[in-house]
Length: 491
Ligand code: BG6
Image (spheres, rainbow, N blue to C red):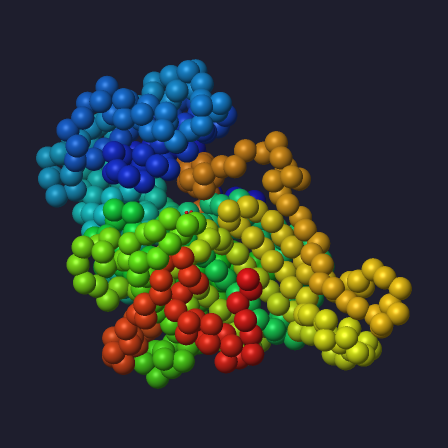
């Protein structure tokens, strides 16, 4: 059920329309929606950025991005023409009022109903751009705005941005993007938890021993050094993607699948996170920075070489988090993310408690492993349930047990379904005015508050990132972090 009074947008205005995110993700997503005829029939798309392009120049940029990003067998002349026909472009800059006045006038001329703005620029422009739209009469009823992450770099800057945006758009009209929420596998986690009766009775501290959330990347900083060096893994990935995954794993069942109900449950999780600060940062967190190494057999430079200057920014972070509430009391949530790790892998792993008593003696007792549920989100989508089973045989030397996996591979099961870019889903929802898969202001700010304490803890105790060679799973201390509680990272 979607609770919304909005009508589908008649105009989508993309700020930063010539930028990297637009070319890699946004424009290809709009193309795919066009190809499947999912965009509202008459919706226009207005691109804006500083670049002095005209409509024709923007159309060429869009066509080039489609050519590059959409595989040939999925491209059609028809769909491309359909997309290009929707386009318009006007250069503008949030700090140039005349250009914003002209943009607002173009918006008013093109709209035939609701307007969706999408801010895909540096966050410092969000407030000024929103306020300029309001000042020129283009932010009133029937308008809404999508904001890209990061919303600031700490709690104070996030509040400043949110306040500035709120002066033009009330909260119900603000759609904060966390593109992980647009991923099919992430929504499937919600389906797994709340569409099956099987797991809920076990989904608590009585039955779950530990939870691990890993978002591992093989890439380095890829030309985004200036942004990344200010952010680091804690702000770039953990504050948003990993904490959103943690919320979906740990939250109570929402009363409905609608924006308020889901976000009311997520915020409770964020507010239950036990603080990690100067007092415990040394034992509960690990920061790392990659040095030269090899990924898939190819030599890659270290972070500081890539950046071209010395840096104390972490490219890896691992935490032992606790959700202090009735459901999760005492269960460690291990979170880790890093760049230049050995494999691209996003997964959530829940390890159940071991059997209360083993009836098997001898070798079988030693074979015994706890049950586990693996929710793999990337690179493939897969759910695996690890169970103990009898090893086939006549057991002349005694019964033996083996761990086997019940494996549900969604690509095989739904092989006809195309893998979508997360933005396809997010665009459609925002165009239709459904905010369920977007992040509310209080969530962003609670996440910053928690993450700020960790960053301050590192600063105040002088804790520096430890080096790890590219192509390894982070500093050795990340292993001792879980080892100390008698656990091990899932390999
Ligand atoms: C972005 C981060 O939010 O997510 C990037 O800024 C990161 O540093 C990216 O590479 C990862 O997204 P995905 O969809 O490739 O897992």
